Image 1 (cartoon, rainbow, N blue to C red):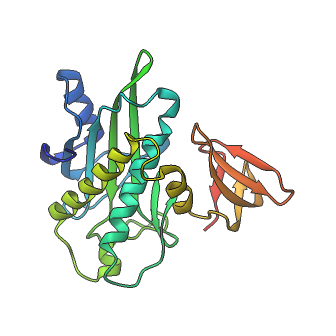
Image 2 (spheres, helix red, strand yellow; image 1 turned 180 degrees about the horizontal axis):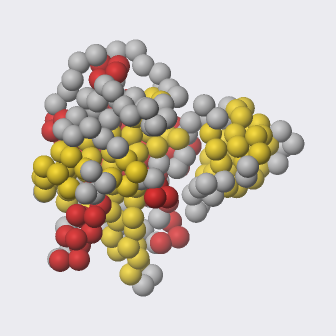
Length: 250
C-alpha cells in the first residue's frame, strides 16, 4: 500500500510542502508518496534545513491517514517510522561490517555516531482524530562529500563503497514502512515500544548530555507516552525532557 502511488518530481522546494498542496486539493489515499530528485528547501525538525546533493539521495514524503490513532498517541507513529527507516538502513548495510544503526531521539537515524537520515512528521488533527500525517524522510544514499557546516554526516555509499540505485532504495524503504505501519494498526503486534527503546542511541548507557544547558551524565531509559525522552541521572532520578532540552555529546 505505501508507495503504490508515487508522484515523482525533478526538483521541488520541499516534498512535505508538495504533499500538503495535494492534501489541500483533494482527499489523498493512505500511502501516497511524493518523491523529488532535488529538494532545494528541505525542512527538518524545529526549522532546521535538510541539505542533499541532487540525484544522490532519497528525499520523499509519505501521506498517511492514521485515523485509528488518537492524537495523544501520535508519537507512536514517530516510533513506527523511525524504526522502519532504521530497519531499511540496517538491511542495506548487512552485506558488510558497520557500526550499530540507531535512532537519535526523536527522529534522526544514525550509523555509529554519524547521521544518515532524518524524519519530519507534520500531523493534521481534525476534531478528536489524527486525520493526516505528512511523513518527510531524508536518507543519504550515494553522497560522498558534504558541506562542512553539517555535523557528522554519513551515507550508505560510505560503507558499501559503491553506489546503489536510488529508485530501488525507495521501494525497499516503502516496504519497511508498510511493515511497521501495519504493526502500528494492530496493538501488541511488533513490540513497537520495546523495539524503539532498544534502537535509541545511548539506551541504557551512561553518557554525557547537555541537559537544560548543563553538561550532565545520564542513561536513556526510553520515552514516555507523549514522546518525551526519559533519562536517569547519577542521583537515581529519572527526568523527562522535551526536544531542545537535551543535547547529545558525540
